[in-house]
Amino acid sequence: MRKRRYSTFWSLLLILGIAGCGGGISKQVRSQVTFFGPFKELQQNPERFRGEMVMFGGKIIETQALGNGTEIIVLHLELNASNRPDDNDQSQGRYLVRSDQFIDPAIYPPGTLVTVAGRLLESEARHIGQMSYRYPVVALEEIKKWPKQDATYPRFHFGVGVGTTF
Image 1 (cartoon, rainbow, N blue to C red):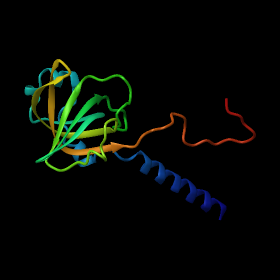
Image 2 (tube, rainbow, N blue to C red):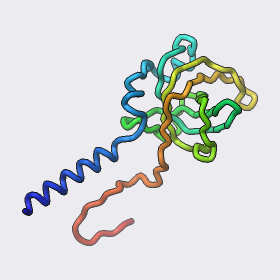
Image 3 (cartoon, rainbow, N blue to C red):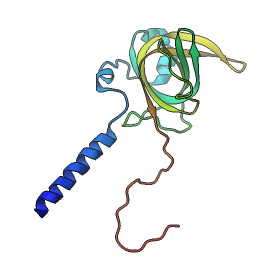
């Protein structure tokens, strides 16, 4: 009986662990990605990669609802092994995400971490302040909004005895 209880416990823990690692962009869409190069290369020559399926991470700068859909300006951030953007100061640029669907700016506000998959359409010149800037434009196929990570310490702690925190 005791052995069965332990087996059930470990099986449940394994299932929860696997479920916790899931998320991000669906396997079906990830399998369609054709561009695996650095973002900087795509940004320097977007016409060469037109039509490629891309998957990028980033932090939303602005979400704007338009008459025919939504446009999101995203600060590019590298993806980690879980396809979650690394929230650091290591950006290689910005890109535009266009969707023909309404994406509520209240649900996708500035500062939100996202992973985006879609087809590269073109590039578009705009200004950042006084500087001219060329944005790669991605037609949205799928977007994943990531929850905020408030703490960097482990979420689980196992221990025995009396402890203290400094």
